[in-house]
Amino acid sequence: MEMKLDELGSRRIPTALAWAPYGLLALILVLSRTVPSFKAWLLSVSVGVKDILGETGISGNFQPLYLPGGILVFVCLVTILLHRMKVSDFVKAARESGGTLLGSGFVLVFTVPMVRIMIQSGVNANELASMPISMARWVAGSVGDVYPFFAPTVGALGAFLAGSNTVSNLMLSQYQYSVAQALGVSGATMVAAQSIGAAAGNMIAIHNVVAASATVGLMGREGQTLRRTVIPTIYYVALVGALAWVAMHVLNWGDPLLGVKLP
Image 1 (cartoon, helix red, strand yellow):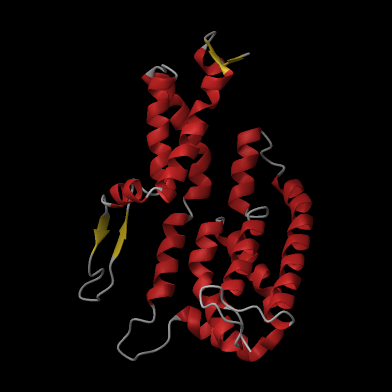
Image 2 (cartoon, rainbow, N blue to C red):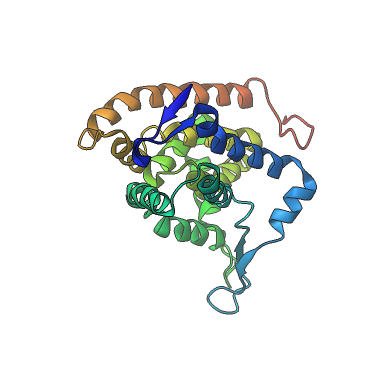
């Protein structure tokens, strides 16, 4: 069985070879997370900045070879040799996909700094609590024990606004954990509810809908897509919220890493 690639004219490649980059990507991702020596080697390459904005003590760094995005770029480069592609064809494919993702990815330029400011806002001369912790204290005092039901909805809202499950978790996980501490319930379960809700929120994230619509040729029909996906999103967050509330207030689940149940 063979697959024809229209972008490369009449040249055909076997289906197995067409799937090979996806298999290679999955293999490297699994090995990078499960083989300690390989993981350490990938993490050894780090890019960072110390004392951001002066003598603040705030630093940031990332490991390009360990990040999924870096691995994806590596596999794309390997695919040039694997499929014996012309450089011009690869450049054309990169240009087309980059143009599609530019609109949805551009928001990260503003979202990531906003997340870091929220997290690092606790670093101040007046010893004030960070923004996520301050919000958590207010919510815990205002909503009370019913809050776990709404934890997935908060995660979904973060993904809807940011267009990313990852950014939603970066922005709100500390907040969710702080609410759990203030209510005296499982922080791990609360953060899990946040993560699940953020994953559900990807179904209605504007940037994801726009990018997907552009990919499959449905530009201009984003509203119709959102009207369809919001229904399973509501069901998703409501069910997970109910399960989280039962786990915390009926089953009294504790944090698994602590090995104890909450009273």
